Image (cartoon, rainbow, N blue to C red; front, side, top):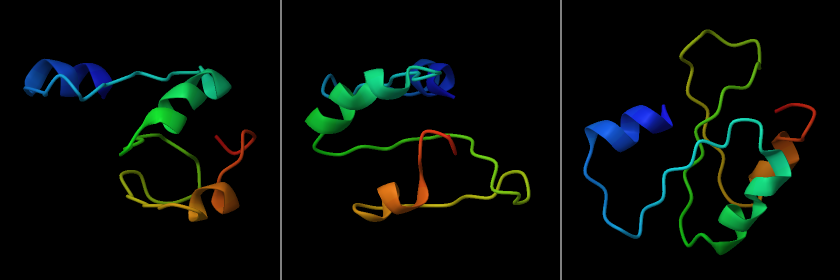
Amino acid sequence: VAERLYAHYHWPEYVEIVDGGTQGLNLLGYVESASHLLILDAIDYGLEPGTLRTYAGERIPAYLSAKKM
């Protein structure tokens, strides 16, 4: 997804597209320094493929953990 976003759209210099892959905690610097953050990930919640779930602010830690990701 990251490669396609980077290749097919023009982004301002202040936008960073990062393929986090399996970097886990190594991505904390991006999370902590971002004024805005969009994370695209695949998590098995047993839902239909393509289902979109959104989480915001303080709700994220309540639903996601390193074991779930």
